[in-house]
Image (cartoon, rainbow, N blue to C red; front, side, top):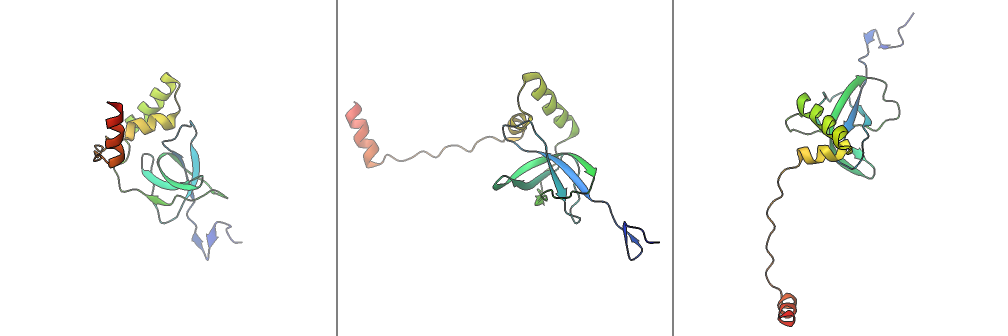
Length: 133
């Protein structure tokens, strides 16, 4: 009798499914299938399809599962993982402030904006400034 989980007598490795949180205004985790050649753990930053684009998110949970018709994680980002204490803090802030977890993640992971480049006065801006005073 053959084992349905085996191929030529070798035991097949179970598939991995991850729930990822993205820095968007929703409180929903999205489930994705993990390619077999990719090792992921909670806290890892990943790229994955989100709607019509590929977005960066954070693995919030991982579990064994079939993955069926789920979309696949595109890549693991080579960034330091979000520590469990920070993920717990993001969950707590979202609950306490009644904010979507995705927006709290956005605030927690966003770096400072680069300084704005100052535009030179174009002829149209100079003309407008002359009219105003």
